[in-house]
Structures are given as C-alpha cells and as structure tokens.
Image 1: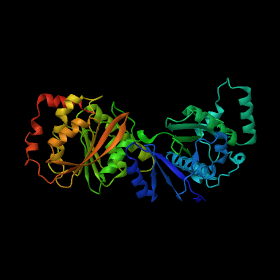
Image 2: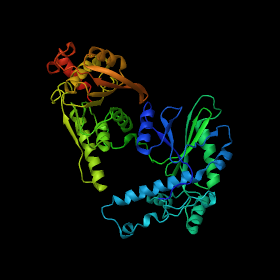
Image 3: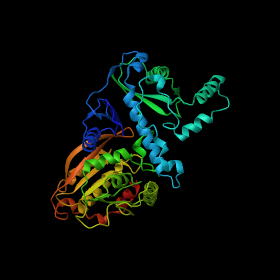
Image 4: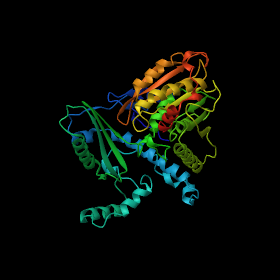
Length: 449
C-alpha cells in the first residue's frame, strides 16, 4: 500500500453525546488523537500529522475550490473505493478467471495527480459497475449536448466522475443558506475538475461542513450512514446501530462477560455487541413475539452476510422470549445489563413507566453481580427514571450520564454500578417481581420494543 506524503484529516459523524467515546476508540484503534468539533456530532483526526486544513467561510467559493489540497483526499478515496471492489469480488460464490488473477486493482496505488485535467479515471481502476450501467442507460430525452459529451468521453476512453456537494451548516450569522453554499461550491468544483454533477448516482460526495466561521471540506468514504448497519428488519422504535455501539463502549466489555439486553426489540444492541466483542456472551430477549422474530431475522441476515464473506463461525448470542420482570436467570449471574428502555412515546406511556421502571431496576439488580455488575440504560423519561433509581439506591449507584439526541428527543444514557448489597436483604427488594399485579404485567406488555 502506497503511503501518503502528507497529512489526511478524517471527519467522522458520531451520535450526539458520544463524541468523547468515539475519540477514545480512535485513540485505541488508530493511535490518533481525535478533535471533538464545536458542532456536536462530529470528530476529526489526522492519519499522519496534526495539521488541519481550515479556510475562512468568507472566501469566494471559486477561489476555495482551486486552493484546496485535493490530492491526498482523492488518493484516500481512490484506495477506499478499490478496497470496496475487492471485498465485493471476494463475496462472489463463483469468481471469474479475471477476478482470480487480481485485475481489479491494476492502478489502485497510483498517486492521484494535482492537475485537474489529469483527474479522469480509467473504468478499470475506479468506475463501479453500477455506474457503468448508469452511464449507458441514460433517458431517451437527454439533450443533444449531453449525448455529444458522452460520445466524446467514450471515444477518448475515459469517463469523468460524477459528484455532488452536501452542505451541513450550523450558525445564525450566515448571509447564505446551505443550498446556496452547496450550489456555488459545487459549481466551482465542477469547473475545476470538469466532473459531472449528479445528485443521485454520484461517485464522489463532497462534504461541506460549516460551523459559524469555520469551513471543513472533505470527501465521503461511506456511501450511506452507518446508523442502520446490521439491521434488515426494523420495528417501530429500532435503536440506531451507532447509538447501540456507543452504549456498548461505555460498558467496556471484558472477556467472558455475560451481557444481557432484557428489552432487545429488533436486536440492535446485541448485534453490535457480537460483531465487536466476540469473546463475551450475549443474552437478549423481549416479551413481544414479533420483536423476537425481528431480532432472529436480523441475526440470520448477518450470519448469511458473514458466511458469504468467507466466515463460517456463529455468534456468542442467544435470543429468547421472556418476561421482563421475571427473567429466567439465576441471581447474581450477569456482568452487564444494557438496554433501550421505553420512552413512553411510541411504546407504552409515561404514566405506565412509573410502575414499570422500578420493577425493571429491581429485577436487573437481582440478576446482576453485586459489587462488579454494571448497567447502561437509555431513556428519555428522565424524571421517572431518576425517581425509580432513588427508590433503588441500596442496589444501584449512578456513575455518570451521557446526554444524546434520539430522533430529536433529548435522552440520557445512564451508567449505573451495582452495589455490593446482596439482593433480598434490603427494603428495595421487598416486592418480588414474580408477584407483579395484573396492571403491571399489562404495562410490561405495552413497553415491548
């Protein structure tokens, strides 16, 4: 792999509230120091040096496009694209002879030139097959000028890249809108590189992030957001995969830990867990049969995907249908409990949460190991949760809270530590969860994810 001569700054979008957690992961896995953006939900880190490119937003867009150091960013984009092609070919069940010979990356290590006239790419090295079909299947009502341009491109043997500009803007002192910035800067990029603008079937997505008087320009390395990764069957309150992963990072799972999600819904949390922490064991369940079926289908989808990619191993994960407040587990047998609790919005109600939350915390305390057990719980019903937690103060201690944005709702991820008190010896656990009333059972049913 050819090393880059200069620094490349990577910008990553993360769930709001998990910026520092993501920065810790960057330090752990890449040994790089991440910077948390002033605009929540983003971090930036350098691959080779600490140099960060910045420009003032007052610069004319035409001048900005010409002054940007595109070379290294395009080199990384090109390398990323060739890796995707390589993975795609590896997944084929019957590879062709040309695939076996490795012809897919004959130019994948070429340095991208800084001259915009040379940034025309051979189909063999960069064009994705879907894009080839897009070029050849233009609508019949295309203008004569576009058809003539395509004919010239085909005769010359090269194809210009398609691109779009996406602007994310924060701040109230701008004299332009996000659409204005994307349009003007996009025009400058098109003039500089002679690329073709395409809002839907693009090869390159240029990101224009503006926060007050700071402008950061980058190239997207992921085609779509990762917040739906690993999920193929969705429910009414499916948790974003990125949020689920951030919650798991807060748990700091260790080898052989038993991790339980008692309200798993569609399984976003345990799925993220088994993909990253395969030396821990995950148990997940829900009292709603439909939710359990969705979780099972999501697991089957991931297993099929990993099997197609060459892996034949399974996951350390079991999913069952159970009663949330009467878990079929021995007392003091669980290391970590992590779950997305009902907000009382789409599922259940805030009124029912006042009965449900104390029962949940009590049963979680029963199965969690005294002294060492942890719980990471997400809820938007903060008042109800804190009241229930105060009733369980002999069993749980709040470590800290991470505030996050969940679909526009201000929610909290509460990190709890299990006290050393043995369950059954305090006033908090006088009411046995096994003897819940009929109304409490109904509340648990409504709270199903």
